[in-house]
Length: 135
Image (cartoon, rainbow, N blue to C red; front, side, top):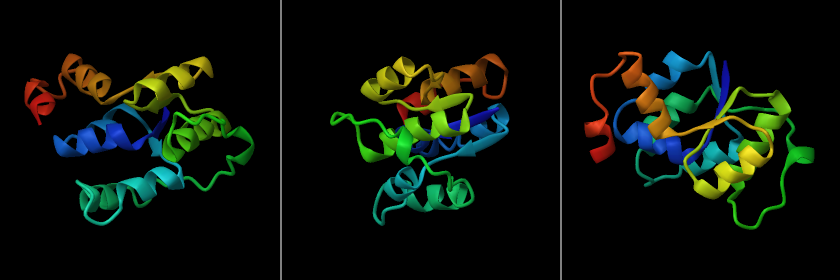
């Protein structure tokens, strides 16, 4: 399965040291350049850890014709939704409520950081999600 990831979910999983869960659920994780840029800004929380994890996961696909025109969403969210359409991704990993609504309207399956944690608990990959949520 292929998943496109947005910054909010990646930051949440990074904070609780559970980026490894993504590799347990998906064969391939990709993101558009805008998401990578958001995540790896200097002095941004978790930027160094995310830079290391994501350096080989940046998509080079041309997403221009699929970009939505939505002033409520950020560039990373718009590019992530467009990338899902271009590569026919199985999931978009995103936490932002408005972006999730737009993705669903475009027939994109979504999950978020909490969905990943809940699935990991159900499958026995982690014992509890409470410490992750508290972080």
